[in-house]
Length: 99
Image (cartoon, rainbow, N blue to C red; front, side, top):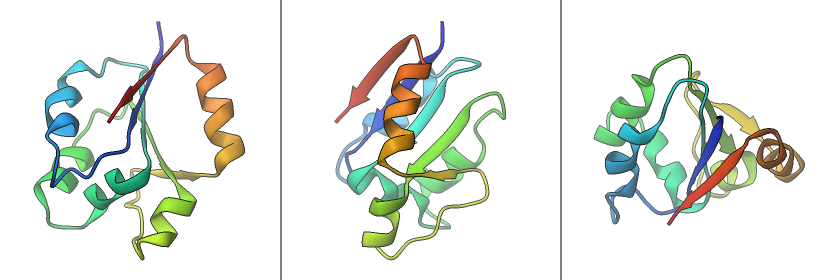
């Protein structure tokens, strides 16, 4: 069963990203939205954790949220728009939103 894990809280104010990364299984996907995109700041602990995720886990980031915060995704993440966000939700068996 493929699960899409959506994170929206800042990894510096909330520990859900770090704690829930252990729940990601092969073929799952991870989507960063809102303040969770701050995890893409190079050199930070969240960035290191995300960069080292298994390649069997697909990683996405919402383009609008990255641009609004003046960040750039690392090569591990694919930028998606809102239409892609909806498509990802329909392509997975389960969607979990961690806030």
